[in-house]
Image: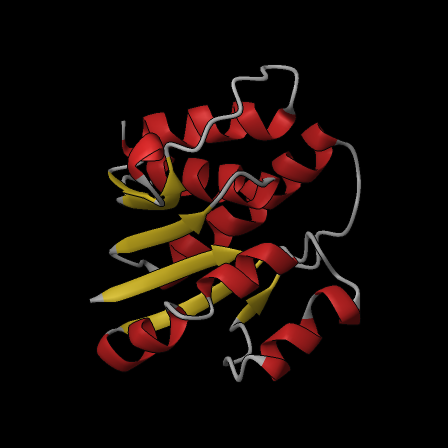
Amino acid sequence: MKIATILGTRPEIIKLSSVIPLLEKEFEHLIIHTGQHYDYELDESFFEQLNLPKPQYNLRTGSGSQGRQTGWMLEKIEEVLLVEKPELVIVHGDTNTTLAGALAATKLHIPVAHIEAGCRSFNNKMPEEKNRVIVDQISDYLFAADEDSYR
């Protein structure tokens, strides 16, 4: 089975650092890095320190407005998914990377697993809250971090 993990920020790298080695061991696995965090100290240094494989794809998104950044990532992630044809896409959390990865996969009919699903601040003015709600709705597999998130 081929699995693609889509990440792009320091917290995603850190939180997925225990999952990535398991995926690497058990599956054909690829890492798609959007480059949402692109500074060496917020990105590459964590792959090195956590002894993680380098991403097969680095989309080098950089900064920009919410819409521009998410749209650009959606386009580039879709291009990679069309080439790689994974059977499952894993996303984490509530970032623009998470939203773009889940949208790209679901539009291509690739199942999506959302790690840290169900987390809510209930503050609809936060872009991250919108991302959380949307990604939970379009994901096929929801992995909640705790009982509150599960409920």
